[in-house]
Length: 165
Image (tube, rainbow, N blue to C red; front, side):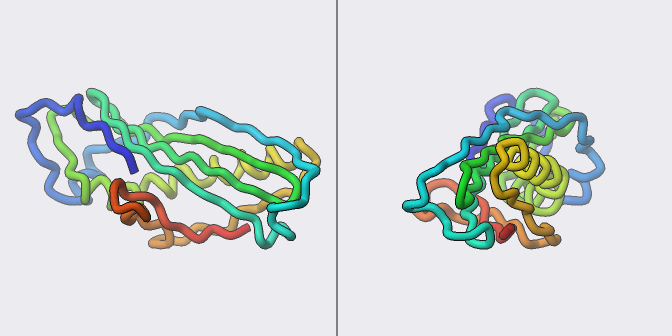
């Protein structure tokens, strides 16, 4: 997860807990940054079946003035296509409140991913269908299934989720 909190004023009051954050934040938009797909005729190095499709999600968080944007970029590799959906959910959040990193991670895991996931799922499925490729239906995302955790290199946190098609 990458974060940009540079627009939070130095005198901002810390948000106490997830309940206060839920009371303060209001979903105001969904942004699509990229929806793309490419058919592939090469079988080498690709999953052998749709059940073995590979997926990766990159998460980023941006705070700008009265806005908290949480962005999910999903890449799915199927036997016959490469699919990308880059979607963010945007929340209004008064700038005089400061949200700690652990609280932001909890908000991502419990709230933001649930708002974004239907848009990611639809984009991946629709793109595959338009390409005439094997459509990857992303499984149901259950509460608590998506976790923000340490990256393999130990630097920035990344997501961990099992949403196998």
